[in-house]
Amino acid sequence: MNTTGDFSWLGRALAWARRLSRAAVWVGGALTLLSVALICADVLARRLLGVSMGGADELSGYAFAISVSWALAFTALERANVRVDVLYQRLPLRVAAVADWLALVALGVFAVVLCWYAAQVALASWEMRSSANTPLGTPLVLPQALWAAGLLWFVIVLALMLLRASLALVTGDLALFRAVCGIKSAVEEAGEEAAAGERLVQAELAAAAQKGPQP
Image 1 (cartoon, helix red, strand yellow):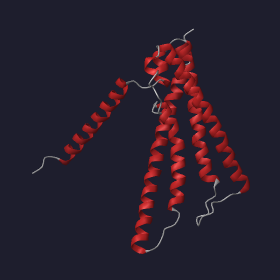
Image 2 (cartoon, rainbow, N blue to C red):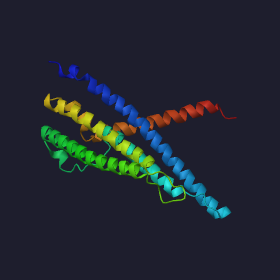
Image 3 (cartoon, one colour):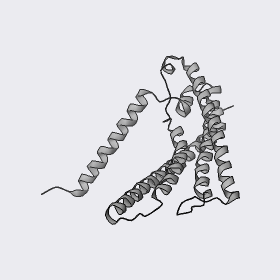
Image 4 (cartoon, rainbow, N blue to C red):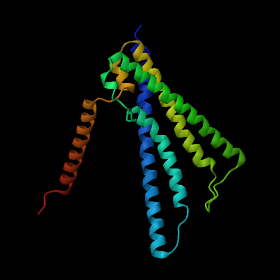
């Protein structure tokens, strides 16, 4: 039986999840920038005009919580989460693979518990029609539901990753396994940095070409 072919849908699902997670990160970054702009405007208004726009700190708190929860899935897919690898580098490949699998399972369990309680908080706010004790009076279910939805997406992505990694581990495809949930090697990190530098240089060259020759 061709396991790779039979479960090729997993690879497509993870690719789709990566695209959606990347878009969520961009949206979260935009929310963060808008929060910074709002706080700056509020500080300037207080300093120069002696008035407060109101709600800047409240809205920035909501934006931060939502952007963080939606960024977790992309962090996991990119294997950018912090892990201590002092002993990991000295382990045999198969033992290290088992450690990676156990780490992914532990992360998944933690994510499920966190998502469950987040959903309970949002549900309680919905049932009690709770609103923030602030001048804005924001219905709490709105930011809490978006926050919980980000955690739910994190759980879904982790489930796809765990299924893909488990199949790769069972079939002995350690290269695929490491690509899904292994710790990035120094070579991979150096390659990503080099690619980022190359994109930056190309962007600068393109900008310089658009300006044309200087007189």
